[in-house]
Structures are given as C-alpha cells and as structure tokens.
Length: 544
Image (tube, rainbow, N blue to C red; front, side):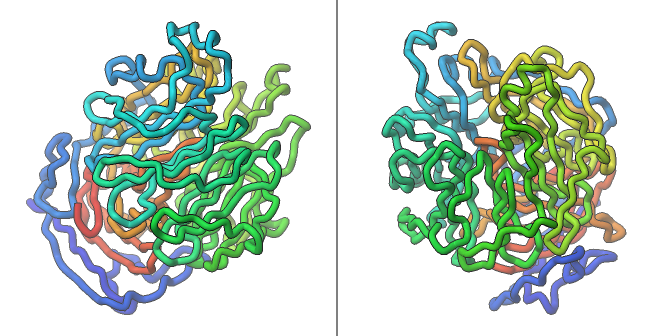
C-alpha cells in the first residue's frame, strides 16, 4: 500500500479542496489571500513506509525525515539528556537569559544559541568551577551538541532568534542586548555556515528584550520588532528590512511609539492577511504597510493585578482548534512570589472581530506556585491539542512544567515546584523522533541549564516547513482530518515566549489519525494543498 500526496499550487479560484472542506472555506474572520500570478501544479507519490530517524528523503522530494510514533496514552515524561548531549561544560558559568533553536548548517537537527547576561563580578562564576563568565554560545545539533566559533562579543544578551533575513536560504541570527555596558545588539549573517556580524541595528543603551520577526509589509523581507523593557527611554523599535542587512528604524509614524514590554511576537490574529504585533500587554493590528492600530478595550489588553504584576513572555496558538490564534502570557510577579503568592499564567481566547476574552479560570489554569516568565504553546503528547509549557519545574527540577490540554481545558501536573528559575524554555524536536523536547534556560550559574528529551507515548505527528524567501515565517499551515474537520491551525514564527526562539516549522500532534490534508498559505498569498498525507513525517514545501 502506498500513501499519496497530491500536491497542488494554483490560483485560488481553482485550488484542490481537502475532502469535506474547501481550503477557500476558512474559519470565522479569515481572509482570502491574493491569488497567485503563476499557476503551477505537480503530483508526487510518497510511500507509506516510515523509516526510523533519517535526514534523507523517503521517496519524495517533500519528505525530509520520518520516525514512527510510539503511539499510546501515557503520562508526559522526560529524560534529562544535558550531559549525554555535551551541554554541561559549554554552558558552565552562564547567567542564561536568551536561547533559540534554529539552523546554521541547513541539516535536520536544530542548532542552539544561548546568550548570557554577563553583568556580574568574575568571582561569582567560580561556583561551578568557571574561570569567568561564559560568553554567548552557538552549538551545532546532532546526536550531541558541539560548540563552534562564534564571532560575537560578550554582552547582556536578552533575546535571540534564527531567521533568513536576506532570502539566501541560510538562517541568520539575531541577538539583542539589554545594553547597559556599551555592547550592542547584533545581526549575524550566515553564508553557507560562515558567520559574520553584519549589523548593529539598535541605538546605544537600548534595553532590548524578545525580538519578533515577520514580513510586516509584504515585500518578502523579514522585518524585526524589538521590545524594550519599562526601564528604557523610548519603547520598542520597529526595524524595516531594506535588504543587504540594512535596517531602518520606522517606529515613528507606525503607531508603535512609546510601547514598553518584556515580550513580543507576531501573528495574523484577525486573519486579514496582515501580520499583527502582540506584546505582553496589548495587541496592535497591522495594516500591511508598517502601520498599526492598537486593539480596542474589547481586544486583548493586560489588566494589572498588583504593583509587581510584570507580564513577560507572550505566545500565540490555537488552543481550542477553532482556526483562530489565542494569546497566552506569563509573568514574573517579583516580590509577591517571595511572599508565597501564586502566579497566574493568563489565557485570552480569540473571539474573532478583533475581540478577546480572558478564559484563564474557566479552562482550569489555576495560579502556579512558581515564577513563569516563559510560556509557550506546544503539543507535548501529540494528541492534537496544544498544551502549555511554562518556565518552572516539576518534582525538584526533574521535568518542565507541562499543562496538558484536555480538549480545551487544562490539567496541572502533580508535584509542582520551582527550585529552578528557568528564564526561557524553548522547544524543538532535537532528536527527530516526532516529539517536542524542552531546553530549560537557567539564570543561576550555580545550576545547569538542562535539555529534556520528550519520551511521552502519545499520538502520530506531522511537521511542516516552507522553503520560500522568508524561510516560511508568516506562513499559515492547517491540517484537516479525513472528514474535513480542522485538526490544527498554526502560523510559522520564530519568536517564542520570553527571550527565546524556535525553529521555523509547524508541528502537529494527530492522535490516532493516520492520513490528513495539509493546506499551506504563504505570506505571499499562495495556497498549496497536500492531499492524503501520511503521518509521522517532516514535510517541506516545495521540496526538502
């Protein structure tokens, strides 16, 4: 038996529809992307066979690797593989404050960059036997992680992301600094694995936080919004990509003047085809021309709970599978935590029409007895529902906090505790087994950052990436079941929670479903339909 992928990329008026649902029939408030000017179509056959982890295509130009799922319904479980992956020594002596998964060498394995807040006296680093503070590290993934030469000076690195900024097919690197010491934020060009600092895009003294990356104006060049914390002078900065690693500050006149936040990300929340900007305290709807309108009071906006209520990481994802991206916010809560208070992770449901409603309590998200600056949506057991990962720990640091999504309500883990202060917890499939793993980025140099391999027996899976001039950033991927029901809605992005970044790919858990239809809508407005797609594979359009 052979599983077939019917690959169709044509003008919207004649797209091939998923069984039982037309790709032109979108969820409420979705917009129809503009038609492609160059119709094209092809058909590719993909065998149903699913070889174990392999970076070689398996019978199709679309299949990058595959791995059979360990199908089951067991509890979420992790294995600490920090030592076996070679991460202990390279990360010794770090005040970790930025981490991102991505690719510098173009292979299947996610690479990892880790940034340090090197603002402490040298003798404070001796607690782990370090001679001094460890600089920012770039580690190439595989069966282990290998440090490589990295042309970046040490600084208060507070955010990171991989993104193809020049459209050459290689992922470049953005490192932003909370610059109190004259060490600038940098953009590192990747040219066939050769790295070179090409730009210092932010003004001196800028107190940067998470960078949000997307093509805001439709010119097929990724732009960058960099958040500034409330101790800064001017607020976040919008950088328009001019090409050739030249970025122009276009904040003035954009509607984003004087916006302060700790977290930022981008997604098309109202499905009008224009990316929107989400900070940890509000949302700005994009007009597609580098101008924005702040959401109304009926839209998402942060309401302070107390004087130390400090919203931090922000994530977007469709937790209820209705085709609309919802908003999740984590926070510090600073001194209140020291008094024993519990910290809420706050969830806002997208109602359409640019309106959001906080549903934290009604979906079972009780306040957590831990700092939780980083939050992220991810299907950790591959059951088809986006779970929540927060930057605390369970059972004395033995595992990350995972709040399981049970068809729209959340289940808190047992043994919740917080001996570790993980500033970030970026997620990627580091071993290519179809399960998402977690990197716990540790602030305290006396404790190690940790890599947790996901060993959960869950459902089938599918991962999709897009090889367009934007590296897929801003592309929307939807997966439909055999009856045409929507199984998942994802928008490819690289900003992740707080001070963290993730690979440019869309991961879907599929439960027991063993064949799906995939609909990809690129940032340029092209719609691609892949029919009768087998599971437990990573697909890349137009080819791997």
